Image (cartoon, rainbow, N blue to C red; front, top):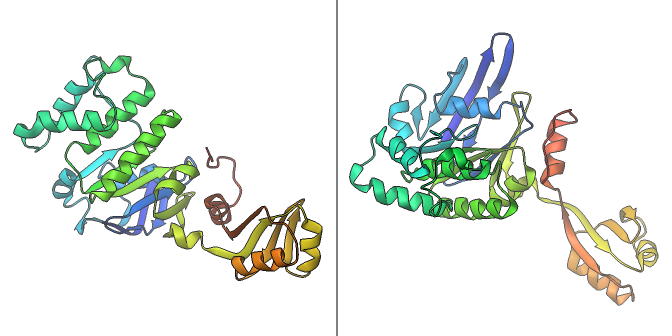
Length: 301
């Protein structure tokens, strides 16, 4: 759905994006991670033709960008750097103007606007002027605009900005529904938890470079260790002498290939086990390993 090759964007002497190769398969939920200033938004703006690349290649839906942008954009929904709207008009009126500016079918406009407002939870307040909207409501309106034409590709930059926990949950459920219906998602965020719960594939940007890209399941593959808790931690440590690689009170990390067999061994020895699980790297660990320390890092919220 999206592919870039050696993509570079420079502003004078500043390299905002340096030699990035992104691949977003059709049907994927791709999470683009990185701290503020890492180049995520610049990359997205190049994909949408809002800024031109200094060098490199971009294809979206198999077509080169920006040369065939006019063919691609009608099939793309996007929300970049916060939604813009006419403050004196209602949400519904803003959507009518936006839809009328494109090539959408006028006969279906009313129905599509109603459906979009309903899906993002604005059906009951759409008559109010946008200037009275909260930040979260403006974000919902921007998402409604992105969904107006049932896009094949949905590109969202920080889509949960300004939403409360309930709103974040609702938008996440909506994006999963949209993806199941066939829309490919590219979601840019610096919130690790959102990417971890929503995305199937992850790209990690740092200082303009793509420093990691893979399926989330691969990045979080088992480490070969088992983490367990036991009130008999001393007995566990003695029984598994040489296999315990880390201990913090009643919590032990053990090298073992089979968690079920380990549990059976401990129970047979009369040792109590209150918790036992295969250890997997968290997304936070993956990102920190890829990017290293920095002053402006990502948030786990």
